[in-house]
Amino acid sequence: MTTKSLDAYLGAWAGADAGRIAVARTIGAIAEAGREIAYLVAEGPLAGDLAAAVTNNVQGEVQKHLDKHSNDSLMAALKQAPIAALASEELDHPYVVDPSAGLLVALDPLDGSSNIDTNVSIGTIFSIMPHITGKNPATHDAFLIPGHRQLAAGYVLYGPQTSLILTVGAGTVGFTLDRRSGTFFLTAKQVAIKEKTKEWAINASNQRQWDDEIRSYIGECLAGTDGPRGEDTNMRWVGSLVADCHRILVRGGVFLYPADKRKGYTEGRLRLMYEANPIAMVVEQAGGRAITGRERILDIQPTALHQRIPLIFGSTTEIERIERHYAEPTAGEAPLFGKRGLFRE
Ligand code: AHG
Ligand code: MN
Ligand code: MN
View 1 (cartoon, rainbow, N blue to C red):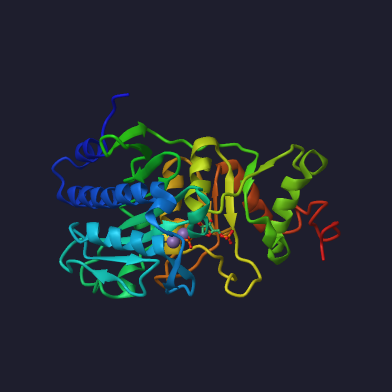
View 2 (view 1 turned 120 degrees about the horizontal axis):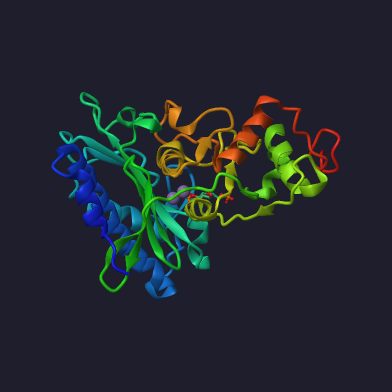
């Protein structure tokens, strides 16, 4: 299959526009690190214990060897890119590259850390934002830009294939790594999320911790033909946001990581700046939607660099259905989880 390389795609998009050339170079640097991480991931245990705990990161979560290695690879590559600073899940504070440069990058260097040693797809998520003149790129404040202002976003998925999913604001496109040449080739010219779906993804083990809106929506899904939905549904949960997102891009569906009552989860689990925002841009540019339940993710004014946010995204008709559960909390009571339901404590 002969098709356009990532460099050719970015070259054609950027043309002679200096701002776009800087974004293209930054994406190129991320792709270079992604290729290196992909080769390491594919080695698995031959490369040592990639899931070994190294230390705790700023989220208070265990940082594994591959988390640290991925962060180091991306930092090394991005030091050569025209960026003012980068922020990362694995760094307490932004790392300054060139304060006079016009871009900022926010990274989840390795998403799906709990799957590292299970040979299940994991990935790198990135967001490229403008560096607002006058803001000190060493500060968290410089990064607190709403997602709708992202210039580009995407992820590299380390699965059976290594995929790079990208949006520069002109649709969402997909590239596949050719391992022989080390080149990412364009293999999906316009990703389009199916409007209608019956497939949903949520960590159902947290069911008793959910708010009523989520309980009633999932209750309807589980009730299938016996409930108000009138159709059976299907459930999938990989446990790597990138892999769950990828499945939704390919065949539709909806993903939910809502806030819940557990300590530390009252604002959700996923991080706004380097998980929810870039995924939301990819999803919207592919014709889907991304919300917290009540608000569009990309409209949120961030208040902290490592802020968490409830994240719900996917096919439009399913998002509308979920919004109805938020708008009319009692309307969607389902037999299994409703107020008088079987599974209601
Ligand atoms: P990370 O590995 O970057 O910390 O992110 C893990 C995230 C995400 O990939 C996934 O959707 C979610 O955590 C899974 O959470 P649970 O283990 O609570 O299901
Ligand atoms: Mn993550
Ligand atoms: Mn991570």
